[in-house]
Image (cartoon, rainbow, N blue to C red; front, side, top):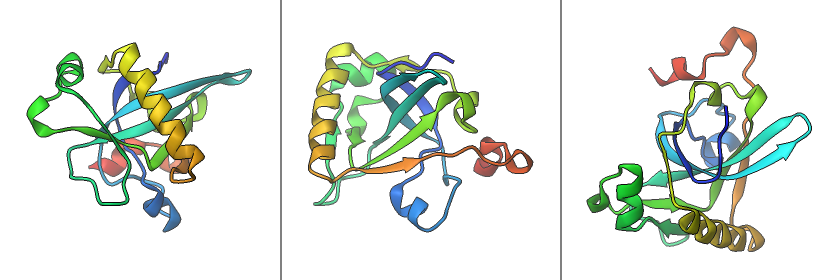
Length: 149
């Protein structure tokens, strides 16, 4: 799997509040964006951000997806999509239980991803972003997708 920054994927995003409660399976699939790819000797890891159409709460940091970018990736511009910046999932691609089923749907433009990354790093530096490290699910419970049904 060759995930790159800007790739739009359908992914079982796990929110930090779910992780804090001990939940390891996300409740639904959602569109997400691969923000960063980190190439390590053991293979790549990725940082994944959620895409949502729900209005942001006062304390949520969001990055608006403009109409042209919505059209680029096949999203409906009238739904007012934004990318959440306060929760992010970190996955090691080779050991991921959820990414192995995933292929990029489309990709956002490089300029859009650059602006998104800049804003995300600001939120991260202000300690308003929460990491959820996705760990491999044991073999007997290995199908991430089965928990979506």
